[in-house]
Length: 59
Image (cartoon, rainbow, N blue to C red):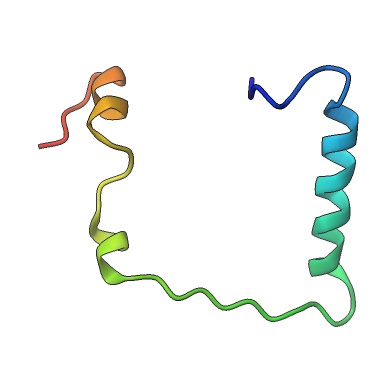
């Protein structure tokens, strides 16, 4: 569980997330564009420490 998520604020966090999602479900939602570098697509997910803890190799 994330450190910022505590039982006393979980409902508030969920309500905030739902209200943000409503922006994209309204009649005229905003257009979103994402520009990413090609290397981001080619880079393996995670980093060596994450891969090692999962029993995988970065090589």
